[in-house]
Image 1 (cartoon, rainbow over the protein chains, first blue to last red):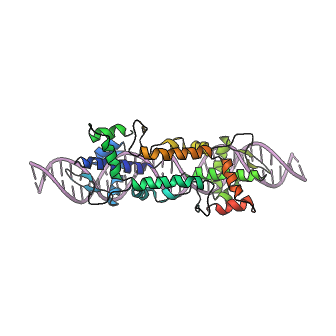
Image 2 (image 1 turned 30 degrees about the horizontal axis):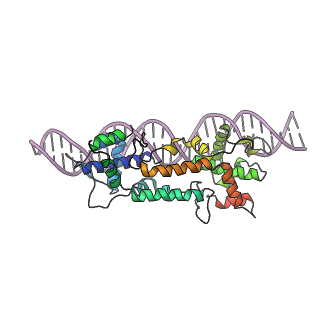
Image 3 (image 1 turned 60 degrees about the horizontal axis):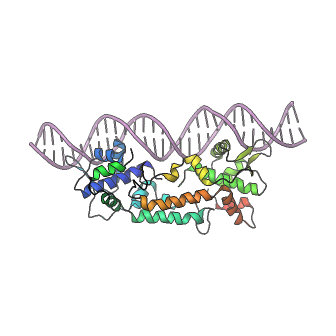
Length: 153
Length: 153
DNA sequence: GAATAAAAAGACCTTATGGTCTTGTAACCC
DNA sequence: GGGTTACAAGACCATAAGGTCTTTTTATTC
């Protein structure tokens, strides 16, 4: 579906938010382990996300990653678009540059509603809503156990 | 959406079928030009498709590519899966290995119907149905002009 | 202010994707 | 059967994606 960088970014940010809800500020080592991503690669991706302003970081002892709660929620569309580009939501399945109502490719009519549904999903789902969904399932267990259980190796 | 190889394969086969409907057997040079794909790369992809049994070829003068009409129609799912693998239709958007009703990722519930719609589309749409749709639009013009017009450089 | 803990930066490597080119080989036609 | 046409095969190259590692900087704590 998405490329690795996007997947790790998504899982990483949701994990950070989940921990933040628990008054914790996880570091790269913990994050990479829990989301099943390579350590250094995770670090590199998180650096980019900080530079992009999606998440904040604190160096030194007791440091780690966290969300600035004064900022608005982050729709996953913004995250995905910043890594893969907007065309991942708008591109034609047949690969045509010009494909719309006027010049439709042979798949256009059937594919348009699907793309619309995807756009709607990524517009309305945010890192925060995803973290809350995970937390909701976690009654009785620590958040860490939870995501650990559902995260692929 | 799909990678380049898949796009060229899709457009190439649909173009071949469209020409076959017109009693023609196009060659690599013509195909690559009309679908807007690099010449040699197109040749390589078509070779693979012939080896995979998706389409037939004839060498020598008057040769080219054509579909064996005694074979059943080719759902684009088979084509796409043979290039990108089945997981392009079944993979979890969150990137989890285990993601289903029992162990759902936080996007699962909303993403499942979308994936189902995609599967339905690629299962029922075939190279033949796509070619016919193109032809239907082409009353009054040659098929070649038509696809030429809608194919991106 | 020294020790320590953690992120930032960037060099570097590996593999996959996308693309080019040359040579071989089969079919057809005169 | 020789010339021509067109696919087959495979070597080769460029770029991007994915991943690793070392060094530097910043912050905290004692």
